[in-house]
Image (cartoon, rainbow, N blue to C red; front, side, top):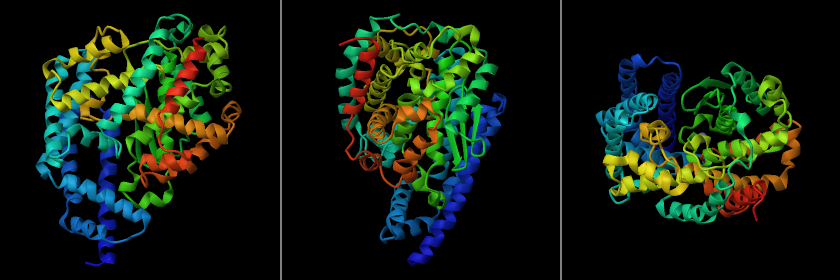
Length: 499
Ligand code: ZN
């Protein structure tokens, strides 16, 4: 085999892999949004067959040989990285048989189906068996992939290259020591900020009209982006010019859909703004979760929770809901969407308490994979942590262990990337504020200048570099969680008039 032959084999095979992936991604979007639940048995079986075919493509003998050959060649920066990522993924896959791959994909779908049923009935017992099976499978798979490495370290690295428990422990220690005291102080000032008007009645049809206005403001364009509805909002980048986001309307909480839509649009722009030259690659387009969350949380918090973001949008919202908002000023509205208190639901938590929700999940996952958790009482362990850190009582499983989708498809190790992404976002925001007049751009509707900045400094690279390198290039410094801590402290001390 020579380089030319190997590259030809590689490129031909990844085109096929991408075709199968597109089919699976489209089916997955369909499954999570509009597909009737009674079709799931048939659907899951067919999807797992396609997954089996995909597995055969990924572990094809000739393809494996080509990757191994190319690993030893110097193919230039982009292709070297692509092949290194391909080799890593391939080595993992080769530890399993096709049947094992299919069984695992089936378990993920069954887990997700069970979770959905359990959540709507608010009964953990309906999900427990599936969850324990997924934990067990994930442990077995991790041991097979790398018996020398701790299972949870392996999973953390899957979602953010280079991360492990040691690094996260340090990061969360900082969050605990620096933020918990402030959170407690603010929680004692309950009702200091009036946000009751956010929870009046906001019919979904009218919320949808406002979502259109937000998408227009963000330049989330229907020529490449689509918004659907789902229980648990997500983004699915089928390709650079076919990016799907979802949101969920709560008729007694106007802020939920707004911030989840803006969050998902942050993911969507990242998928859309990757350098077009990477269209012919596979692995380089698979961005890590930490940096992905840095973009979504950047949109959601560092941009959308500012007064300037709503300067043009808020009058539109008032026009749509005069019965709820005509006497509420822009300043009051923005204060209300930044109100902080200890609560039960992660996705609806404010910026300050949010990382504590993540800390709780991180500690639980760590215990689960270290064999220290009481697996028979995971729901109770969950509730205990909420009581310990946030002082809140979980009364319904749907507001406790069942609230998040992640464990239902074995995404163990994903949660910490939300907090990491927030911290990366703070560092990017600091640099962006030095380079651009962010408030002026937001208040005059020049959102494109901001997305162009993100494209140029971060998004175009996709997975060409890891988050540490991209952040260093974008901000001129190594990752420093201090920016995140300082941002939150400054913002909330001011908001709550605390020294
Ligand atoms: Zn996200």
